[in-house]
Image 1 (cartoon, one colour):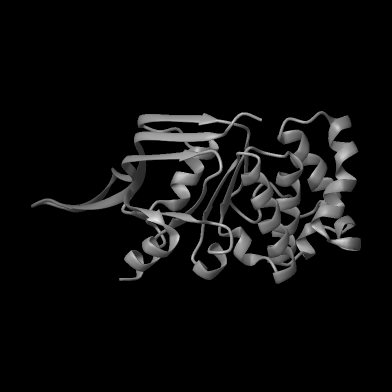
Image 2 (cartoon, one colour):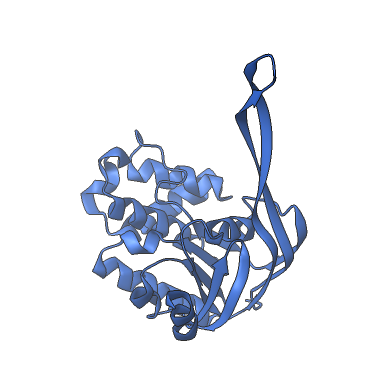
Length: 238
């Protein structure tokens, strides 16, 4: 495949919040509605080339998830430019897209169709998803009975089945048990060897060190540091 690439140039994402404001006048105190805005990302620029494994480091609320959602196409930038080359696969929430009353098998079929597969293609691949997830008999039980780790297994197996060029993970790998973490790492290294990209946000730095060699520190929606994982983690902790 051609080398994957992510290029963000001065990207900004703005959020609006609707709230009630208490207004006091000489005659009366009353409530009125007001709208405030906040920038989730502002003037953020980063380039990620094929073969790069990048960890997004930073405190909760710094903008890591927003950046992943922009790359995934869930959010549109309000300013700047974003260029993506390669097929995307993302697992940004453990329960994203899963319907609690459906079984793992039924959810796998549904997510496959939503990912662009025909119904026939989704049916042909569902047995492989079952094997990759390692859920055994639980694959045919409602996902409402699943643990967080089991949900993460199912979600990753569905994403992995699509064989993406760019894999995005938002802390979900941290919910996996030791055995399945090794499988995720193996697949990530295989993807990188094909010229793909793996971007993950997380707080388990020792876990990230097993695959991710580069890190980007996100602070207040901006890039505060970009370098080796060890250097950026030290900068963040200091």
